[in-house]
Image 1 (cartoon, one colour):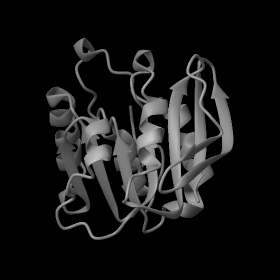
Image 2 (cartoon, one colour; image 1 turned 120 degrees about the vertical axis):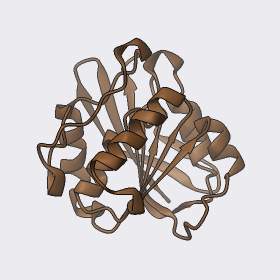
Image 3 (cartoon, helix red, strand yellow; image 1 turned 90 degrees about the vertical axis):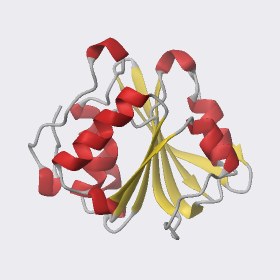
Length: 190
């Protein structure tokens, strides 16, 4: 895996050990996602849920996001994310939270010194878990969003997502793209 574009373009990303059975977002899909959000990423606050290696949040910083928060519960994946952050020397633009994603969203766990809400949220739960729906339900009530925040969900074709999730915010689907056996669904917070 490598960074697709921006200031870190072409630099390799450390992958978690294959024994973890993590499925990183492919370069092709990552590039397609950033093509869609390219005009929203500059100076954005980016939240990378189920972060794995941290590739999405690092790609966001490479593209001009001012800060990325990574939430991941697997300690080996967290170690890989931290190694990638050191590799790119972006410690001052990142926060890694080793915690269960749903519990993090539902308890609105403290984000330390972060005072701004997230402009863009990316989630890529394990496909077999079918956690995309539950995560979107939790995000609809997540207090660290703003009106017009973009939420991007990568999920398998077997997990059909609703068009709208209602809570404190209404997450309304505005785009869906298929890439083989996966779908990337885009929502806006209203």
